[in-house]
Length: 122
Image (cartoon, rainbow, N blue to C red; front, side, top):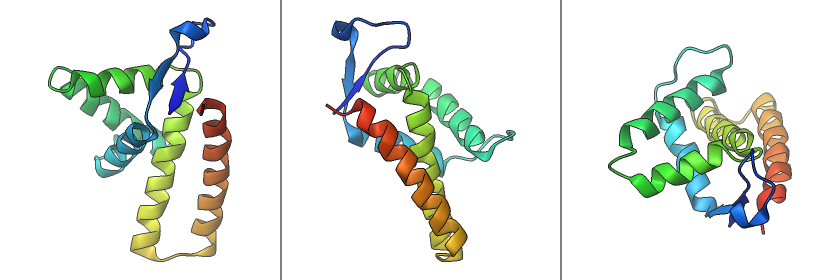
């Protein structure tokens, strides 16, 4: 479980919990979308995910609420971007093979992801 704290709140009673599987779903979904043009590649995927979630918010309200809480939580958006990056690097590894550059990028991103994730887990 991830305990999400809204950016504007300090009261622990206002925390919202989501499963790690939900974060995984959002990251995987983003990696399958066509990214928008952006200064950084990850932002293009993140924006595509945002639009996708907006398009389903009435069909799958519970999923949308989890996504909305995640991106508006303290370090939530950063955690999501790390998870998306890991999926994208894995995708590159499948297409291009495992290179030392990709392996190093993956390891660095994984360390960052775990570091942020440790702040959320309870």
